[in-house]
Image (cartoon, rainbow, N blue to C red; front, side, top):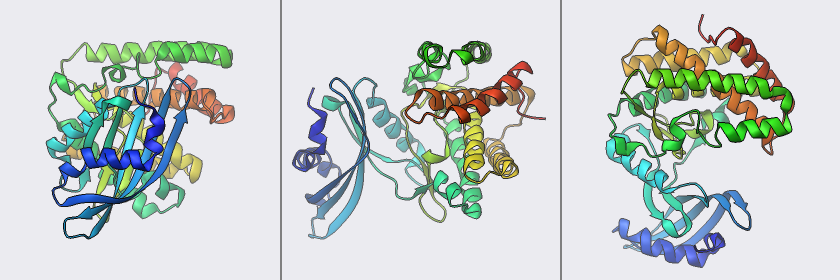
Length: 345
């Protein structure tokens, strides 16, 4: 395998783009300049995880310059071919036009297990939450509901399961066993809660999925930082590493938990968080043309609190260590787990 450090060499990247990108754009004849911006740069002796942006000045056939941002997502030990394949699939399924979009896939580079795609321009929903720009927040949440309804309406084939590992709670990266071992080592006081929670969530998911052959494409990481406002009307969703076939309620529960959690952190207004949840869910149901029956309520609730557990895990075992914030989430989870989980009145 080539060295990942090559991607930080403008000459190497220029040669790669001349070979892979220029043929995709008949109006381009060359490259003037490339600026490399690392958004994630985790490189160890035997592994890496990167997200890079290449601000590239392309030369048109008429000698005019056009600037495009090309992104690269790469991981030494996790597939990134699925990102290119997922984007390409969605691009062909109608996300290449209209006001609900995704990044434009360009190519997969197997030598470094990296997928390249054109970035989407704009700020994410979390940015507007932090700015307390409430009209924009509500508008983007409204449109996000439409985006997820559009995704879930796609009738996928089995080949569209781009990340089978992440299609089940049991195996979603980093996997139940890894999480339990980490908690046992670092926070044994929570181990019993984690074991009970995982057992409950996994059984509930398997019981539902075994009751129906229906599967939907789910984004798998539905949170405000992955939703981009591109213009007055247009939004895009990014980060398709986890796109897989599963229960669509997973995206709903994940988004509802994350938007409330982020509003609580940055605005400290529980009522407003509930308002955003209502905007999202009401418009999702309308666009998906489904009703909120007892089964769906329970599944959304389960995924909501499973997302809380994932957030707490992140706060307990990542570099963003914050046991105080994790404790608040876990206390609420324990209360609801005792009542067998209920998000809805």
